[in-house]
Length: 266
Image 1: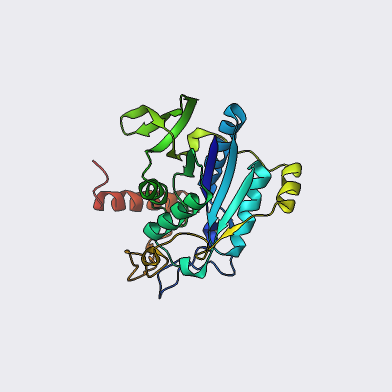
Image 2: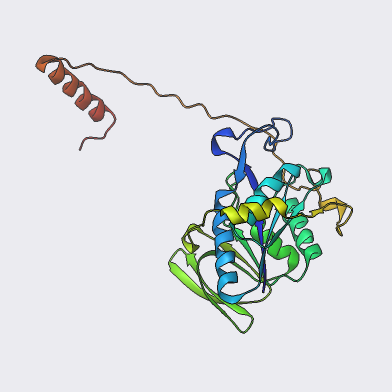
């Protein structure tokens, strides 16, 4: 069984900045980490491998610096990894990103299960996983909260729905998009870190993948950010200092008057 886990290098939540011209995330010169929700997908894949055998391959699309998150995935237990990187892929929206990742997965070949995190913290769309499944024309299960087992080239999963949960039996090859409840991610091991330093990770570019250039990068993205606004949070209020019984009673009276004026009191 061959499992592929697409992972993403994202800025730390406190460091997210947007380019006002292109409307894309500025990634140069900022601290990045593995998308936290992708760690749950990695753990789900590693548990399947431990139970049923096979291999786990981590795949990331991004600049050369994304090699760092792939090595982290290897240090957690992935067998190998692949980087999809080319300047032609820059500025891609979810449509172009899912296409490029799907073509990279085609180039790797032989996949039985693709497992993705629910969403990326820098985009928050939850569209790339389903997009990959659409480009590869494979069955998809989203919001998977539990993987129950594998039998007869099918995987049984439990997925969250508004009314509770749904049990599905999904044939191979397929894509699962998992939520946090699926597993608790493990930590990298020392042996894994040593192996990640020694492992040669291949890079797939526009030159060694079968690609339609109309679907690549910023030019191949049908969605565009036309304007970026930073919300301004304004809070108007009044501070009342109560130092004694008289000022305390005055503060309480003023508070009650304020609540009454806002219609909060019955």
